[in-house]
Image (cartoon, rainbow, N blue to C red):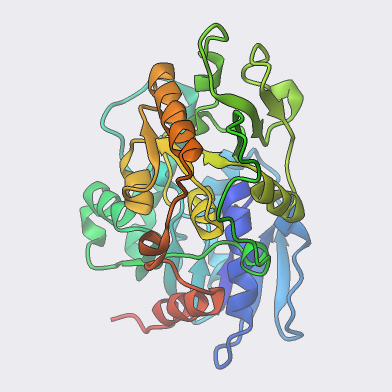
Amino acid sequence: MRIHLTNITGTGATELVRSLLPAIESLPDLPISCIDIPATGPLSTYRSANLGTMVAVYRRQLPNALSRIFECTIFAKKFWDSDFLLVLGDLPLRVKCSQTVFVQNSHLIRPKRILLNLRYLKYAISRALFSLNMSYCKAFVVQTELMKLGLERSYPDIKGRVHIVAQPVPTWLLQSGLTRISRLKSDQSDLKLIYPSAGYPHKNHTLLSKLNTNDEWPVGELQITLEENYNPAPHLPWLRCVGFLSSQGMIQAYSEVDALLFLSKEESYGFPLVEAMFVGLPVVCPDLPYARTLCGDQAFYFDPNSPLSLQNALKGLKLKLDDGWWPCWSKQMESIPKDWESVARCIRSIASRPCV
């Protein structure tokens, strides 16, 4: 088997691969011949634990969007040298071997309306590549039923080839032993929150810029994982940009905050939501299908376009916490795997099935 992850540079996808890839490599019986990694980003330094596995750095000479078009089409023949190919970066390659693609990008689902901007054009090109190459792919792996339905609705020809494999929290959190059962302070003080996310438009940081400081906000501190020069709302005295947090930094933050605030408008899965539920934290998140699917009736929901709705959700959480309430996520966590080994076995089983 060959594993292709040359386009995995985003924060969420990188965290997933950092846990999944070593688990796949540790499985017996199906040797990994080569792992293709990006030339930039955290995974550019990945080294295999197996002496027989080659790690190849894919260096791009062209702008990323144009390079990806050539990589997925006329240059894809360089990845034909294995019986099985597992692509972890969303887009199928034009190869004739047995190919499985792990789709994590919700933007591959066709939107309901056309937008005239560069961001829409970027994802339109990705959707065109996906459609062009999907016939070369034996199987697709997604994380939720919602994502499966969206892909099959967008690309009807792939029905019957889409498999759902949920994932647990990253290895570093699984091994942390962290469990929260209450607030650290019981003095009914204002909320201490965290929103871990990169600075992508769909992460909806702009909602914070619309908040009015004259309104009553029950927030003592909101940490967001952006650098200060990307602060979306400098006028909010309780907003603190903390930059990228390491795994130990995230564990420290989860051990101290009162709740997770999640603003994102689009997710294929929503790892921070799973992380918060695993730890036991309350969650405030958009009233959108991806969040409802994961969090059920235990989260506090708001309209992702409405500052007033967000304010009411935070006030509702504060009142409940002041009354001694704390969430129970046991029902929601029943469908989440307990370890990465079982996920790796499932994905490898799908990827190593012969083509029919």
